[in-house]
Amino acid sequence: MGSSETSTGTAHNSATESGTSSSTHSDNDVAHNSDSPPFAETEKVLASHNGRIYEAKVIRIQYRQNEWSFFVHYLGWKKSACFCYSWDEWVGLDRLMKYTEENLQKKLAHEKDDNDKNTKAARASQLKSKSSNAARGKKRKSESLVKEKAAVHSEKLVSLQIPPPLKKQLVDDCEFITHLGKLVKLPRTPNVNDIVKKYLDYRSKKDGTIADSVGEIFKGLCCYFDKALPAMLLYKNERKQYQEACPDDIIPSTVYGAEHLLRLFVKLPELLFHANIEMETMMQLQAKLVDFLKFLQKNQNSFFLSTYHVPEDIENSTNKPDD
Image 1 (cartoon, helix red, strand yellow):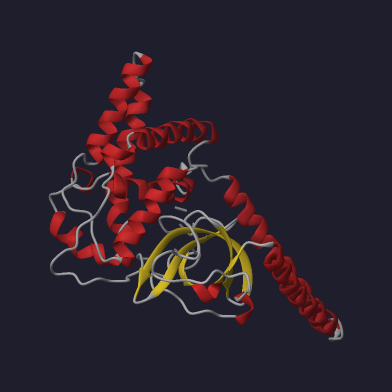
Image 2 (cartoon, rainbow, N blue to C red; image 1 turned 30 degrees about the vertical axis):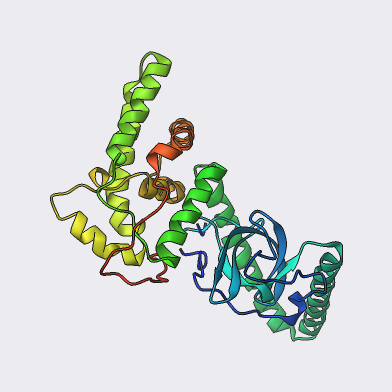
């Protein structure tokens, strides 16, 4: 929510992209047909992106129009400000290689070529005038200050590690809406308010009591949801549905459910950063929110839909989430 984790880049390219480099082809690549995909879900692979080769993992697979396509997550890339991973995308076979020793060597050779080019460029830059060097020095100093500020900013963000099963839920959510043109059927049962009440009841039974401060935290969470939903938690092709489901007198947390609530947790670290909350209070808040995520995971089957519906008046779309 952070996504992307929006924008740190396009979180999802819903259409299968063409290959960008012939270097991604390998003699080790598996022949493909409609019966079995050449790569499996969760398989570690090497993927080409913007002329470079990265380690990635296959998350989803589909076969359409006589072609395999794969939804991949680039390993180690930061979360997007969108609702799941940063830069995850659908790619074709010409963008993927098996994760083998031979192909790893190709990756290293490719990186060496890039480094050699960068080294030559650096040497050439040293031949420029002193005034030019001074200007670059000021620019580097400025960029360094920006990076330091960004690092401080990152350190102050609440850390909300979304459990892997819920991360997959976010991926499925994005897949249903942006790639398959489906929507969450509204109103949802349980809705956001129901889920929060169930959590507070769960904590009360488990702890024997519940502090007033905890109740205030989750009352605030519902308020955040109501304000954030129309502003940053909807994909473009969900806006018409929102306008119909939430006229002026209807509160979103009484209509929407776990699917959209989970998206809020991607955005919460940034939202809370701007709230100027004291560090001690922030740590307590973080612990409660992490516990709530565990509660969502524990009740994933009952809180989340397993499939979405296709509205009659909306064609299949590849709309991206709102910025």
